[in-house]
Amino acid sequence: MRILMLNPPFKPKFSRTSRSPAVSKGGCVYYPMWLAYATGVLEKAGHKVKLLDAPAEGKNRAQTLKIAKRFKPELCALDTSTASIFNDLVVAEKLKDATGCFTAMMGTHVSALPEWTLQQNAAVDAVAVHEYDYTLRELAEELGKKKPNLAKVKGLVYRSKGKIIRNESRPFIKNLDELPFVSAVYKKHLNPRNYFYPANLYPEITIVTGRGCPFRCTYCVLPQTMFSRSYRTRSIESVIAELKYIKKAFPKAKEVFFEDDTLTANPYRVREMCDAMLKEDLQLTWSTNARADVDFFTLKKMKKSGCRLLCVGIESGSQEILNNIRKGTRIETIRRFMADAKRAGILVHGCFMLGNKGETKETIRKTIDFAKELDPDTAQFFPIMVYPGTEAYEYFRREGFLVSEDYAQWVNEEGSHNCMVSRPWLSSRELVQLCDMGRREFYLRPKFLAGKVKEGLADPKEFMRLAKGGKTFLKYIVRGTK
Image 1 (cartoon, rainbow, N blue to C red):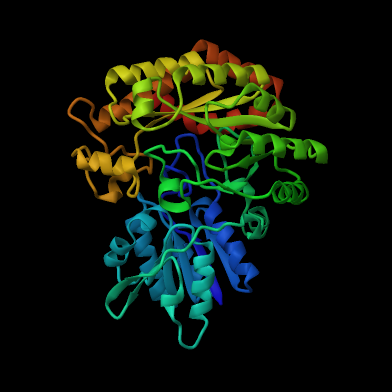
Image 2: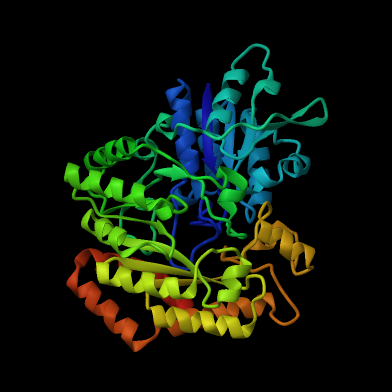
């Protein structure tokens, strides 16, 4: 079967795979990682698959439809997000009109609201909910038969005789080693230079060593809508084999980023992976997502094996707010972690979120001051972005704090985040302005600026990263929100 796996056109450089999809102020563009994993599964099953990342390649709707007509797909599978959902529905309709294909949608938004999605546009034939790699494989198998029986496809919500049918849920994949290397899919279908993470060396390759997250944060969308609150991992042997492949296939890549929700959830496994990297003498630079509680012994081993940077969700400088969102971290533990990371020689990209449950201007002031006290290598300040399917979304909707449930409003005209949470004592606009203030106070410190100049001059690789990210980011720092 001919299958088009599509990251649909929307805003230029719209990063749909991000945890908060938007056009990033720092120029960040994520790989369409989950589409790519499913592409590998479908190709392994013998299908003719084309993976097209329209935002990363700068393709508009007309150009995308032209490519689709040329490819003549029988099945079109579209990635989606809350902010882009109405655009994505139109793209699905245009694809169906142009090619006559069966249309399926996947992603966080449609996993949370599959029936709602099918009610919005009759051109959408089905939604593959949650972890969709094997759902799409079975859907393609059925569609290839003379008499398809979609009722057999677990994890599928579809339209049949004017009714919406929801099939039995699909169990999450137990053996992730069965999945093809996502990096091999990138090699065949994508250009790594289209993807940029401001905190990482450029160009980089993003993979995962596991799916899901065992922690209970109320706001995080992927564990609650896609991959579950359990952490399923690949074998160390599988990870090492892919790293060896990346070294050969992408000789110009400067870094590998492990995009697990929380790689450090199992410190023993992290140390085991580091030992394997050292044993194989990979000499690979890598970064990953981490919690602010990794012990110094593990940090040292990570550094020795090539770890350069940790992306850490610190979120707040108020213990009350951390408790409200069930983050499970303590202010004193975060301070110790930051000191240990610096002592180990590992950079930290700190993520701070303003506007969570219980937030006030006073707690936000604490967070901005805490960010400056911790002094990570880089920091981001986001207004709370809530998505269907998360506990945070339900809380703010129940309390009457959602500005609108028109999902098209989740980003502004430029594609940047548009906070939809507003309280009488803390409006959505004030939240965005306070994020701007946090960025300015953090990045315009003489200490920070002098350190970045010194860092860039000392290491040409870091200079390239700082120059590429800073060029896009600086205009937001200076201009702020109007």
